Image (cartoon, rainbow, N blue to C red):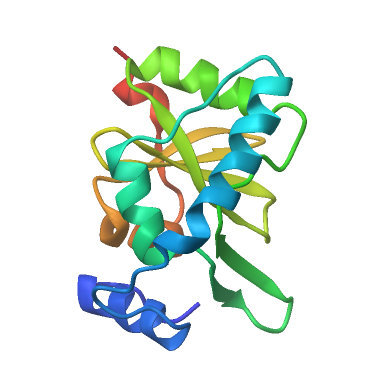
Length: 157
């Protein structure tokens, strides 16, 4: 993962992996979203995308950003429920935060889902707990590069 200090650093990192301002992959979303929604429904924790999730995914879905090339670790900006417990974990965090959440990616180095809330804030679901990444994609990626992140429970309502 390159040096990540500013929004420009984040945009440059995304740009190295195919992102550009105004990128629009809305045509890919229906299949991606349907798979996640069906999987969540089957697990008993329905998830529905909302404005902030759709907006982020329209511009970023399908990107795979290198975290550590030597280890083969990437940040996949593809909605997914990685583990059997992921939908339940998202529902629990959603309840505590008082807002809807939707998965927008995952970190292959940790097997951790990344979710966005209705306000556009990002959260990281890790086996050690849930973490607040930031108020937007720039803050979120800077936080990912500079762990530790803030505990999500600091934002519980």
